[in-house]
Image 1: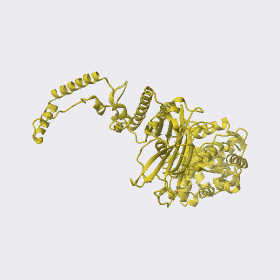
Image 2: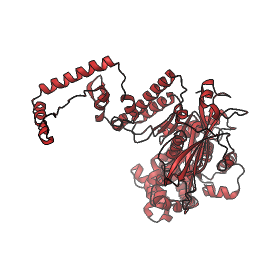
Image 3: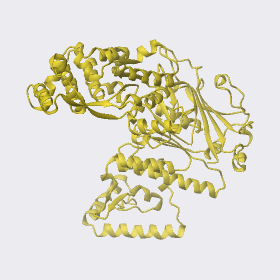
Image 4: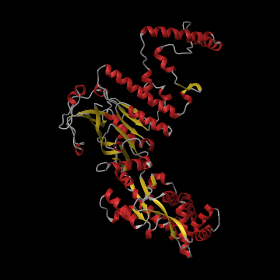
Amino acid sequence: MSIYLKELRIRNFKCFETLDIELKANLLLLGANNVGKTTLLEALELSLLTYKNVSKEMIFLNKNEILDNNKIAIIDILIEPEEKEFSDEWYDHFGAFVIEGEEKDGVGIRTILKYNDLKGEYELEKKAMNQWPKSDEVEQFIDYNKHPIRKELLDAIPVFYLDAKRDILTDMNNQYSYWGKLTGNIELAKEHVDDIEKSLKEIGQNIIDNSDILGYVTQKLNNVSKIMGTNNRSVEINPITQKIRDINKGMQIRISDEFSESFSIDNLGMGTRSWTTFLTLAAYIDLKEKEMKSKQKPFFPVLLLEEPESHLHPQAQRKIYQQMKDLKGQKFISTHSPIVAAQVQLEEILHVHKNGSSSRVSSINLDNLSQNEIRKIKEEVVKSRGDLLYANKVILCEGETEEQVLPVFYKHYFGHECFEAGINVIGVNGSGKYKPFLQISRDLGIEVFILSDGEEETIQEISKFYKQIFGEIGESLKDKNVVFLPNGADFENYLVNEGYKDELLDVIDNIEGKENFIETYIKRKHKTKGGRVETEEVCQKCKQHIYKNKIRDYSGEHGINSAIVDILHKKKTEYSAIIAHKIIERQDTTSIPLAIRDLFDRMNIKEETNEFNS
């Protein structure tokens, strides 16, 4: 790239009240629905168009604010060269609009959405800026270049927008689509056009002459001359296109493989049709580049691609992202696909999220991170738990038991699934693995909560990570975001201690297929190993799960409790969800363990859920 879009600033446009973004060669926009990803793409599009219909709905309003016709929206875009200065080609193209800077030259273009009193409607106004203002001076800035920005200037930086509703069948009937632009002007030498059209006419007439039905219909339609009151009119049926200029109207795309005859693309699913639209755009960009090169004009495309993974299976999603990367120009892609997100560099991710009445954009801060820490974020979060990137809130827990039971308890407590409110529950697989999840949650503005085992070493480890990620934290923040299980317990011990023994015994009997299995288990262990049982522990040095033979005293009530925990530890995944469902059979929400109710109450979910459902 000889140039690129360096920075975007937005004031009062749609859901963005104030936004400054540093742009990259490729950017991936992530976030839940209705948070502003499409709006961001629209702002980029408007910054490079000389005309588009706009309306009052594009002006940002705070809650209960009444629109004043004097309120405007501003979109500023900064274009910079790859090197310190523009190449001769681009310098000649931008001319008087070039801002010469100490570090780099640039071109600043302002787009204003304003109300026109005479027309009674909103319109776009484009101005070149004589300097790039500081962020807090954007709305007061008035130092504009005296020369108007003409369409020819922006033709060299065309913007291509491919929305999520794309379908090649629709495009084939739209002369303004990329397919329509590609096929609407088939350039052939005149002698070839004459020969081909003559042949087409002969083929069409041959079809008519040899078809009794078409001949009969033609004869009947010629009665139109009686209605029109003239004998000089006639009607003809063209079974195929007669003119080269109209040949695109009868085109078909057909697909075949080695095992079948070809068939029309309208018989295929939306995945193939969507992908074909994307490939059509790629072909159009290649042709435009050749055209501009032949005219010795600069060319730098900007691509705005909305959910390119729509209707595609996982393997196809990986392929299409690689094809997008290979396209020329600067790419801005919105996606709901963790598969696509896992393929980008961390610095290319932008997270769009709501913050009150306005939307915000966050990125992952890689400053002061080692390569190993960056790798952990990429491997342990983005690639393995990419759904975190789309959450409004996240609950982190230590293992798979909590990961399975928390969604069950959540639904029982609030009456809807946690994902409906944009809340993810993620087991980090060990107390030593919280840090990358905390890092990415903080940087992307995702509120994070933790339900943790209560061992002293675990408490110290999580507190250390909190301090590293969030800085020195006070007890109030820690109390709000983290719930430790009491008395040094892990989750299974906690359930026993909190009085859920009956439910646990019922689940064990059901899974093992034997009534009073706990008694059999205790007798067998004492008989076969003289009281020694294999218990799961975590080696604090290598953080690996290991098994050791320890002497267990299973006598009395305490022994039964120990046996229950030992059984649950050995089959965590098998027991977890069933235990949760068994507990909520008590019906009352107070049946949910107190520590988990405490966690839910601290998250203020009830208030946010009401807003979500409305």
